[in-house]
Length: 263
Image (cartoon, rainbow, N blue to C red; front, side, top):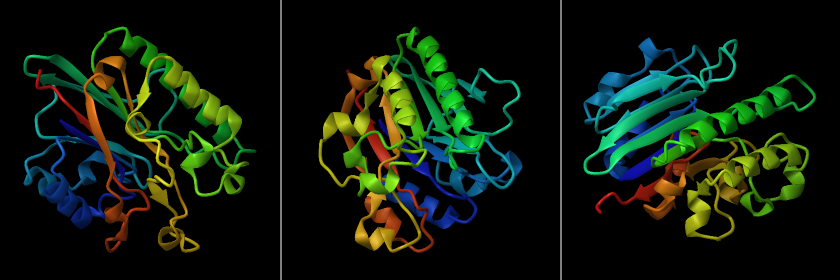
């Protein structure tokens, strides 16, 4: 099973790229972030025409997440628990039946950026990460294959960015941010990409500014975190970097994990 995460940076602006990528890459489940539209505005007809079921948790103008899948999920939950006053659309969860293997649970998340760090945005980021940790504890107790996929806005290690000095005071790389990410890992989650390679200069985001893409000045902030039951089925990963060179690209590219449910 091919599971992908992609910050699309505006699904209406990138619908041609998205449809072309779906045809080329043929993923089974796709987690999209920053769809930047309300649910009613999502271009579902184009995607459904390619054989995908669409579930969205949208928001006007910014944020918003979606899960596209070749099979219809059994359950869908919108919003990360833990703060009833949080109106930002950043989380959607879907449960799929896998023949002969019970349930597969996939969560699509768009973690807050947190910049500028001297505003309320950074405490919100850390609080959101703590909510995610608490949510994950409960889901791990189910002992199911679980994938937490999305734009984490976290650079886990210095080698996950082109120049750590550039990022040392950024919310994506501050020690508190990376510690919160570690706390998630320490629950038993596996970073899918790093479980399959220790290569450097592996990035999933290149800014539109300062020639970041042609210079390969990127960062790795899009992650698929796997529960032990999912990690046991991991066979391969990929970062589909070529998509960044398309016309009108997102500044992120799809990140892929292959899970084997054949036995």
